[in-house]
Length: 376
Image (cartoon, rainbow, N blue to C red):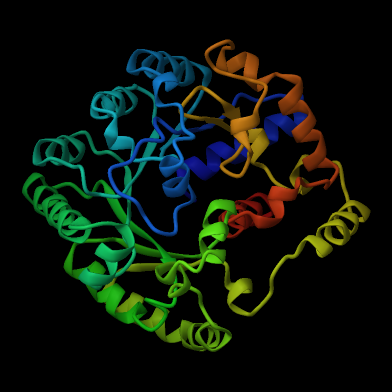
């Protein structure tokens, strides 16, 4: 069992026996700024409407203070991602180095579009053994990827993948673990084997395919008839093609030595969650409630703090942190963690009363893996 899973179980055991444990994970969103405009990204359209307040984003000094406080509080997992491209923050390499220089074991993950790396940054990340990097690449086909993410995105990302491969070999390091996160669309539903061979060629350790989730601004674009967005929607026939070939894909993955995750399998089977079923699901969940922590609907509020670009605070990546009454600029991490807001959310999880966003969670497959470890 991975050391971080053990640490999470240890914290959950403390919650169960003592009624309190410090957080183990921070989701840090440094900025909403981005250098590319992915057609399926909700924030692409929000940026075009000038709805982000970039001037009020946390400074490098404020982020450094949060990191130091978090490390002392007991944070062991740092996921640096967000609504924009983290490497738009020039100080990010120094902040990541601060995390990795901490004497106690930490895991740091960077989620990036992969286009802004310099060779100097790549060499540094290999030297300090940054644990994981997720590249967001839309397709193994250059023209498709550039159309969906922006001109030359494919060329820049693949160049940087090869540089990571080069420096890992030169320096004799296995880290960072390189993962490609992609959206399973009509453009790539029949290219999964090709994508796996692409990963092998460019030194990628794992390919993760997630379902396309249509959020408000993207939905509006679809309703306007955006032809590129329309070309991404999977038909039932395409879903069936993927579902039937999953064993084949995993066999190719095994032979190549490239990991593969296909999340949201239920959605490939045509299982969807509509507003009409939300109350029914919540009611069913509530009937089977068990207030033991190990039977909670979700563990995230017992483990995680999210910090948005402007200091907004949430308890998971699905929380509507933009509307949070809490802000890290006015509160310490400990005050956030012990706040009445977090207490209310934890109570709901214990009582199996999920929030509406919980039913659209794109990470339930990952959460279920931790649940299995806990229950075993």
